[in-house]
Structures are given as structure tokens and as C-alpha cells.
Amino acid sequence: MTTPESNPTNKIEIADLGGGCFWCMEAVFERLPGVVSVTSGFAGGTTENPTYREVCTETTGHAEVTEIAFDPAKISYAKLLEVFWQAHDPTTLNRQGADEGTSYRSIILYRDEKQKLLAEKSKLEAQKDFHNLIVTEIVPLKKFYQAEDYHQQYYDNNSSAGYCQVVIAPKLQKLEHKKVIEETPQVKK
Image 1 (tube, rainbow, N blue to C red):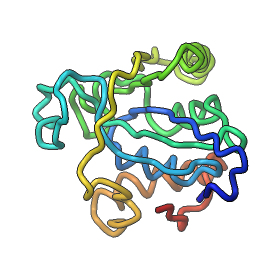
Image 2: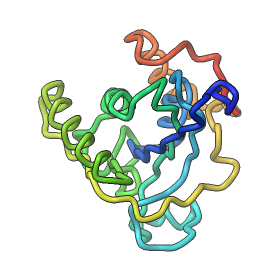
Image 3: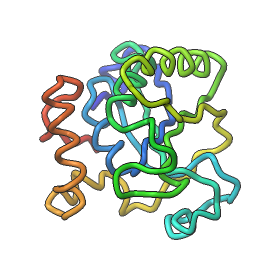
Image 4: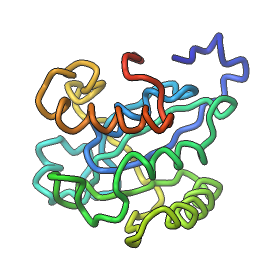
């Protein structure tokens, strides 16, 4: 984990990405060198301060997303986007695996014009790797809402749970094999 002492510029940037279940995305991104922290939450909707239960009703407009704090001297926003395309299927509308609904949509929420342009460029590049059309939304971030505490570091705290074993662990193994992320036993808190 990066600390202020190991980041002499103290420059931290934020990326907001949703690729289905935030537990899966959090487990992937927290294993990348240069990522300072990953927070699971909600964005892209209209309900203020939504709860997980409310988002699951599919009435808030929010997607499950991860807010990724990173040191741009160690990992770029463009690199985070490369991992994002590999960590989920951006060609399925409102679903990832068995998780279905608008809260599981593929979404990039940009914070400024630079992020928007990088996201659009990255999406065009990534399309070459997919037979089907990428349906990922690229929209401005209005507000990020942190999910309840029990959703944070979910995989690291619940790795023996069924969902973690059947869905998240194979995803991490695939990405480790491709050398996209570091080996799994890393926990950042």
C-alpha cells in the first residue's frame, strides 16, 4: 500500500469504474501496484445516499462502482482502464455473469475532461479485443456514495464464502495468469 511517505509528491488521483459486482472489481484493483485504496460504492443514479438494499431494487439508477485512489507516478489512469476492460465483460448490457440489472452495468464515471478523453480512447482501443460491441457507459461523475462497511474489502475478509470462491477467485486467477495483477495474497487496508 502506498503511504504519504512513499509518495513524495502526495499526488493521488481518483478513478471511478463499475464492471458488475463491486466486490469483484475491488478485489482486482486493490492488487495493482500504485493503487492506494479501493472503496466500493454507488454512482450514476439519482437517489442521494442510497443503501445497498435500495440499489438492489433497481429504482435508484445507481451502478455498483469502485472508487480507486491511485498514485499516477506508479500507475496511470490509462493502465487502470486497460485492467478494467480485462476484469469484466463490457459487451453485456446490464449484467455480469449471473448478476443482472442496471446496477451491474459497465460504466466509467469521469471526473474531468482528461479522464473523459482517455476513457473514450481506451474504449476504442479495447473494442479490438471483443467480437461484440462494448456497451460501457462513459458519463460524468456527479457523486460517489460509499457502500456499507461490510462491502469494503469483501473478498479479502470473506475469501472462503461461496460467491468469492466461485466468482471472484477464478477471475483473480485468470488475471494473475495473464500477469495483469499481482498474486492474490495481498491485502490493502
